[in-house]
Length: 299
Image (cartoon, rainbow, N blue to C red; front, side, top):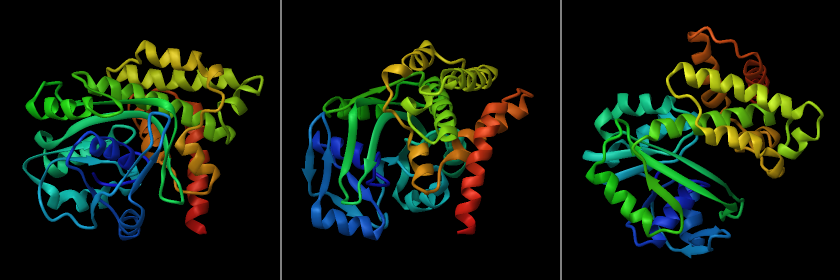
């Protein structure tokens, strides 16, 4: 498991809890934290605390490498996991968006590249604990070509023992596009207002903004052969029931950290431009994030 943060730590911990043989590849500071306190998860689905195996450099091959870095760390992450890949190893990334799939396949080969997406709200606290904020937890993974393979079945069997809602999928690319549309749409709207869903909906035009952005996202997805599933529309309709929801990208913006704006929204805007699809609201959200990143760079 590359990373023992919000996503890697959570799912790695659940696999360990289920009896999996899990090793965490982490930076030295996180390795020291894990050595002193163990891996700690706080969750309504069940708390977990355990000593774990962690390394700061990979020195042997593993069956599956789960990649849970931020998109802006992808290049260095691929360098870090390279020694962990044997001829039959697979890389399962749990990043947002889809651009990383091409990068992984180009580096390690399509035959060693799987795909996955997770719907979960977690954070790595300063204490080193991982906080799971609500009971939402949906993890899907599969082969790029939709095949049912032995490695996919083996991973699904292990996750079936874990305290998480994880399943193999033969339509994982559609799931990833749906997740991308959901994240880009919500992220664009909430970063523009710098708040949560409740803050957005308190504005008389807030729901109109949300629908406009999701319509733009949907037009791009449809042009590339992945029209949004009904679940995406249902998510927009249910916004009034999720007033406390905030995307990690919005949280990063508010707290003055780097965001994944270029990977999540920028890539979508670029794909829209390639198809001559107008997405003015997404462009406004991207500009807002670019200004933030430029300020961080100057600082």
